[in-house]
Length: 280
Length: 331
Image (tube, rainbow over all chains, first blue to last red; front, side, top):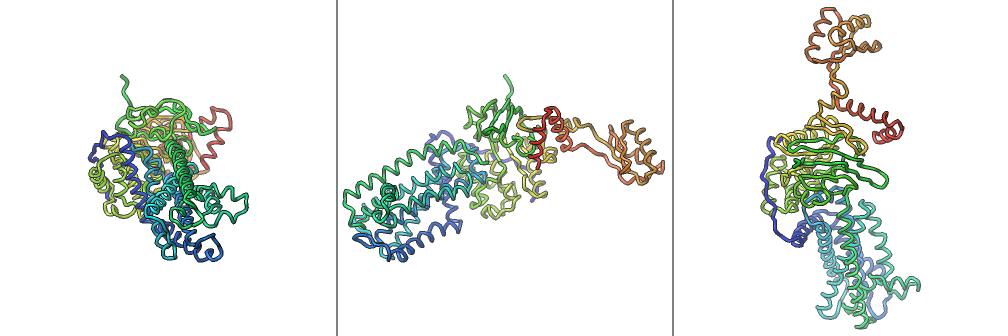
């Protein structure tokens, strides 16, 4: 290295006079961009984001599809909404893993020493993960269509379904953010992150009708947010003739209530936790 | 009105559960100087830095940084400091330039200014060639330089460097020392923590030795060295028979307080006027026909200072606890 002879530089003045919520938004955008760049540049993440969901669609469609009977319809139509919900729930786990990684690498300490909005690291990350999950869902829709998924109904209902799905993705990212900030190591974020997602997604109506489960499990599976959302999507996509309009409406209301409830709890506690956290 | 130091701490206390990380830490850093916080792992150095940079709240005591209170005005402090922590805090998947621009944006510089400043820093830190490569391809030394550059984006009035050369090879360490010396020469105010006595000696205007959450000694490098006695001259002779005559010469030249190690054929004594006494000793030994195999002027290192200081502390407390704790940390 050519030895550094002079480090005197230009001192630029920070922008002043903008309200805090504007900075919260602008800072979050800077950090969301960072997270999205990471997703694009890391080959392993592309596997997680695109290839793994495609594999799930194909495996369930062709391996289990023949064995699983759903009342009054084709399994591929029953499966796709369920697999969407499962995918965004699993995708949410990465939020916590990434935050734990930032903590281990000292990035959170650096961000916390900067005069930036204290919610921006979390909103930036969760918004980036939302965008990534949307990308995954689009890919799965295409693959689903190729293997026989045929949603009915009007475009508004279809878009409403995708919107609620994205709301769920965002809410799960915030739960995961809190877990990541609490456990503080990548390995722990991985195991703690998935350990509650597995029973939640599999003991649900995501892959099989709840009626096929033992009765003690049915009680859990029926009220599980994953089931509620999967049923709401099936209703909105008109892929399950067993669901009446009233069933769909009720499932939709419950789904939105879950999303809002989770966000209302986990956004404030995650931001509070972030303000107090440091690397070990 | 009391003049504010760039960093001023009084009686800082921080507990983690039952462990007392800081136990009444007092220190101040003068504007335009570098204070090295020197101590072993677990002495409380990083905890102190985390309190000054508002990452942690103290349980007791007071601290001001750049004139602002760490508990009451953390947001004001953040706009006046730079921090390079123990781990290199850069995004692996972004390029060097993207990293610096991001930090600039988060200090709320405009996009244009963030870009101009990052280009300036890339030149100064000799990272121009690597500016558009992702940081994960950087060597250890380059990462540290990028990390330090990131802490200088706003040319902060107060800079905190927490063990900035840990894990670097000797060459990269020298480079970092060069950069830090330049910063000090240009008037930066820096609080640096280190486990390397050599590093504090090389860079610091003043050194505060920390152990078990307190400053146990403070002063310039020379002042601390004087606490373990001044320079000493050591001589080794070739033949056993010459040892007695050599000691006589040494007593005449140095002082009556000459210690003799007959097993190693060495003797040593305190020196007030190091190099000149070395020369006259050589002449006298030569004239007396005493063949010497080694002759050196031994200046006490900060290692000596540290051992003296912590050794005394362990004695004063008259329990085995501090020394046991010391042994565990040292291992």
